[in-house]
Length: 150
Image 1 (cartoon, helix red, strand yellow):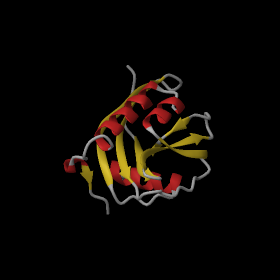
Image 2: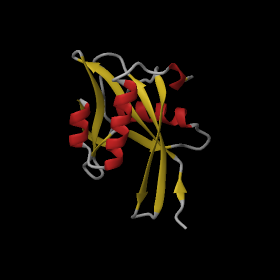
Image 3: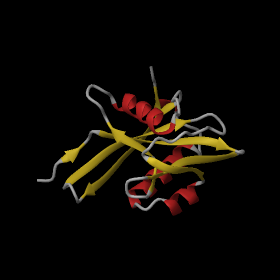
Image 4: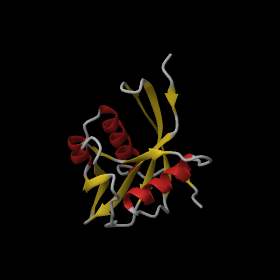
Protein backbone atom coordinates (compact mmCIF):
# COMPACT_ATOMS: atom_id res chain seq x y z
CA UNK A 1 0.00 0.00 0.00
CA UNK A 2 1.22 3.51 -0.80
CA UNK A 3 0.68 6.08 1.99
CA UNK A 4 -1.14 9.36 1.29
CA UNK A 5 0.28 12.61 2.68
CA UNK A 6 -2.25 15.38 3.31
CA UNK A 7 -0.04 17.67 5.42
CA UNK A 8 1.01 20.11 2.66
CA UNK A 9 -0.79 23.17 1.27
CA UNK A 10 -0.05 25.30 -1.77
CA UNK A 11 -1.07 28.70 -3.06
CA UNK A 12 -0.93 30.80 -6.20
CA UNK A 13 -0.60 34.56 -5.87
CA UNK A 14 -2.26 36.78 -8.48
CA UNK A 15 -1.59 40.49 -8.93
CA UNK A 16 -2.15 43.11 -11.57
CA UNK A 17 1.39 43.97 -12.67
CA UNK A 18 1.72 47.05 -14.86
CA UNK A 19 -1.89 46.66 -15.97
CA UNK A 20 -1.79 42.92 -16.71
CA UNK A 21 -2.87 40.02 -14.51
CA UNK A 22 0.06 37.79 -13.54
CA UNK A 23 0.79 34.89 -11.22
CA UNK A 24 3.83 34.56 -8.99
CA UNK A 25 6.44 31.89 -9.62
CA UNK A 26 9.64 31.44 -7.63
CA UNK A 27 12.79 29.46 -8.37
CA UNK A 28 13.55 27.00 -5.57
CA UNK A 29 17.05 26.62 -4.21
CA UNK A 30 16.42 22.89 -3.67
CA UNK A 31 15.92 21.41 -7.14
CA UNK A 32 16.33 24.68 -9.06
CA UNK A 33 12.81 24.54 -10.53
CA UNK A 34 10.06 27.18 -10.73
CA UNK A 35 7.03 26.77 -8.49
CA UNK A 36 4.29 28.49 -6.52
CA UNK A 37 4.12 28.80 -2.73
CA UNK A 38 3.84 25.52 -0.82
CA UNK A 39 4.70 24.12 2.56
CA UNK A 40 3.89 21.77 5.38
CA UNK A 41 1.18 22.41 7.93
CA UNK A 42 2.39 22.84 11.50
CA UNK A 43 0.83 21.13 14.52
CA UNK A 44 -2.71 22.38 15.10
CA UNK A 45 -2.85 24.53 11.95
CA UNK A 46 -5.73 24.51 9.49
CA UNK A 47 -5.04 24.61 5.75
CA UNK A 48 -5.88 28.33 5.45
CA UNK A 49 -3.70 29.18 8.47
CA UNK A 50 -0.79 27.25 6.99
CA UNK A 51 -0.93 28.90 3.57
CA UNK A 52 -1.21 32.39 5.10
CA UNK A 53 1.91 31.63 7.19
CA UNK A 54 3.75 30.13 4.19
CA UNK A 55 3.04 33.22 2.05
CA UNK A 56 4.43 35.47 4.77
CA UNK A 57 7.51 33.28 5.32
CA UNK A 58 8.36 32.75 1.65
CA UNK A 59 7.36 36.08 0.09
CA UNK A 60 6.52 38.58 2.86
CA UNK A 61 3.03 38.88 1.28
CA UNK A 62 0.44 39.57 3.98
CA UNK A 63 -2.66 37.69 2.85
CA UNK A 64 -5.94 39.59 3.04
CA UNK A 65 -7.89 38.01 0.14
CA UNK A 66 -7.71 34.22 0.35
CA UNK A 67 -9.69 31.80 -1.80
CA UNK A 68 -10.15 28.04 -1.96
CA UNK A 69 -9.09 27.26 -5.52
CA UNK A 70 -11.41 24.24 -5.57
CA UNK A 71 -8.48 22.15 -6.80
CA UNK A 72 -6.27 19.42 -5.33
CA UNK A 73 -2.71 18.90 -6.51
CA UNK A 74 -2.08 15.18 -6.57
CA UNK A 75 1.03 13.30 -7.57
CA UNK A 76 3.18 10.35 -6.64
CA UNK A 77 6.53 11.17 -5.03
CA UNK A 78 8.64 8.15 -5.96
CA UNK A 79 11.69 8.89 -3.80
CA UNK A 80 9.59 8.59 -0.61
CA UNK A 81 6.84 6.30 -1.97
CA UNK A 82 4.01 8.70 -1.05
CA UNK A 83 0.98 10.05 -2.84
CA UNK A 84 0.76 13.80 -2.16
CA UNK A 85 -2.73 15.29 -1.94
CA UNK A 86 -2.45 19.07 -1.63
CA UNK A 87 -5.25 21.66 -1.42
CA UNK A 88 -4.60 24.75 -3.53
CA UNK A 89 -5.41 28.29 -2.42
CA UNK A 90 -5.39 31.55 -4.36
CA UNK A 91 -4.19 34.84 -2.92
CA UNK A 92 -5.35 38.03 -4.61
CA UNK A 93 -2.70 40.66 -4.09
CA UNK A 94 -2.63 44.43 -4.43
CA UNK A 95 -1.59 45.77 -7.85
CA UNK A 96 2.18 45.63 -8.38
CA UNK A 97 2.59 43.49 -5.26
CA UNK A 98 6.08 43.61 -3.79
CA UNK A 99 7.83 40.32 -3.00
CA UNK A 100 10.72 39.63 -0.65
CA UNK A 101 11.96 36.07 -0.93
CA UNK A 102 13.34 33.99 1.91
CA UNK A 103 16.26 31.56 1.71
CA UNK A 104 14.17 28.86 -0.03
CA UNK A 105 14.13 30.70 -3.38
CA UNK A 106 16.70 32.46 -5.57
CA UNK A 107 14.44 34.59 -7.74
CA UNK A 108 10.82 35.31 -8.59
CA UNK A 109 8.80 36.37 -11.60
CA UNK A 110 5.26 37.61 -12.13
CA UNK A 111 4.10 35.53 -15.11
CA UNK A 112 1.33 35.30 -17.65
CA UNK A 113 -0.22 31.85 -17.91
CA UNK A 114 1.93 31.08 -20.94
CA UNK A 115 5.13 32.09 -19.12
CA UNK A 116 4.17 30.02 -16.07
CA UNK A 117 3.59 26.96 -18.25
CA UNK A 118 6.98 27.43 -19.93
CA UNK A 119 8.87 27.86 -16.64
CA UNK A 120 7.24 25.12 -14.56
CA UNK A 121 8.48 21.60 -15.21
CA UNK A 122 5.69 19.44 -13.80
CA UNK A 123 2.39 18.53 -15.51
CA UNK A 124 0.55 18.89 -12.20
CA UNK A 125 1.75 22.50 -11.90
CA UNK A 126 0.40 23.13 -15.40
CA UNK A 127 -3.00 21.81 -14.32
CA UNK A 128 -2.96 24.07 -11.21
CA UNK A 129 -2.02 27.17 -13.19
CA UNK A 130 -4.58 26.54 -15.95
CA UNK A 131 -7.32 25.98 -13.36
CA UNK A 132 -6.42 29.10 -11.36
CA UNK A 133 -6.19 31.22 -14.49
CA UNK A 134 -9.57 29.99 -15.72
CA UNK A 135 -11.45 30.52 -12.45
CA UNK A 136 -9.65 33.54 -11.00
CA UNK A 137 -8.48 35.61 -13.99
CA UNK A 138 -10.64 34.83 -17.02
CA UNK A 139 -13.96 35.06 -15.19
CA UNK A 140 -15.36 36.78 -12.11
CA UNK A 141 -14.38 34.99 -8.91
CA UNK A 142 -17.19 33.07 -7.26
CA UNK A 143 -17.74 34.62 -3.83
CA UNK A 144 -18.35 31.13 -2.40
CA UNK A 145 -14.62 30.39 -2.84
CA UNK A 146 -13.59 33.11 -0.33
CA UNK A 147 -11.89 31.86 2.83
CA UNK A 148 -12.04 34.06 5.92
CA UNK A 149 -8.69 34.80 7.50
CA UNK A 150 -8.07 36.03 11.01
